[in-house]
Amino acid sequence: MGSSTAPALRILYGGSATATWTSIAAQATQQAQSVTVTGAAVGDLVVVSPDNAFASGALGVTGRISAADTLVISITNPTAAAIDPGSQTFKYLIVRIS
Image: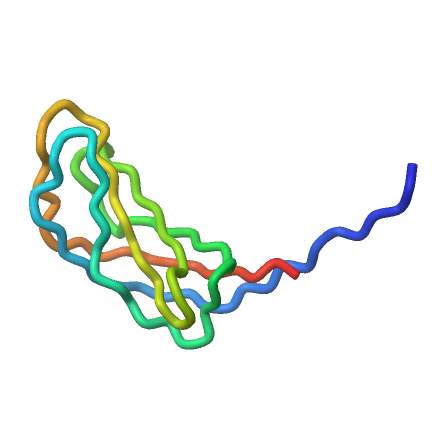
């Protein structure tokens, strides 16, 4: 076996943001407003977690860096009915792998 080096992980930023959604149709995804995170770059790893019970755990939450300094949080409704999550607060962690 050849030698390998594990990638270096560096936690860049952590924080919280509040985002608001309108009604999300059944089996649809909706993007929230963008959040400014100075220094974040496309390709950084994003971990997002809701601060509270989020529609009884029925919704999926994802985050991505869509452009320099811009975090976008999206939610997916996999259920058979529309859900109106309203305003929610999320914690986020941004990691760079090099």
